[in-house]
Image (cartoon, rainbow, N blue to C red; front, top):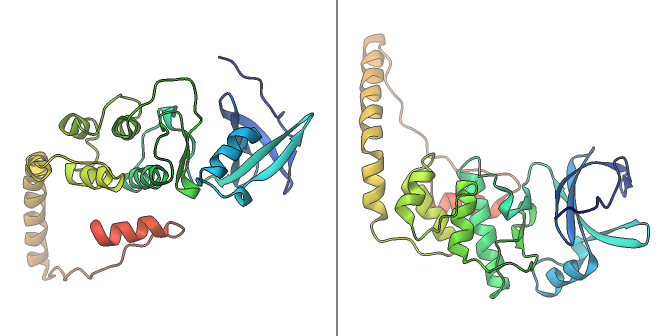
Length: 248
């Protein structure tokens, strides 16, 4: 279904930033790129008020953008954070992105017990999934997370072995931590799956390490003990805490 673009290119927003292009659109919301450091989400008041009254977002977070006979509620989101529909088909680029989504899913579910997040907007800056309550069948959180991790392949996290195969860019153990961070269950044999998956990789890395040690011996240099470091994620305290407690 086609949607009219609510704001024209070049429209001046509060803060003297201009609309550049439409990124995503839905029945009661639109997301635009701007010529500034942020993208902007525009929402019709009824939907924004529903998010506010449910506790997902404080009303003070929203700005107002007037155009014609309408006044849209708005949220600016720094471009370094993801802002878009859950079903956009874009998979996470790394483990940090995957964990951020999982934590947002968990926190949103704590606040909203009965909504489906398959049609939600993911606003990473506020660690929230914002349901849009479209007239489509509800989807379990296991399917929402699995489908998002694979970039669009409908796959519940309960099919852990298949999901681990489709997300081969991360170890099964890391995938398990992400599923757990979302408040979802993992199979009891995750550790075994992880060992099987990484066995060949460990052998290759072991051979490479042996070669490096031999080179160090010949040149008279010895490997130094690694210093214990604290993982830092500026602007993402919740993720930073999770990584230091469960990953590092």
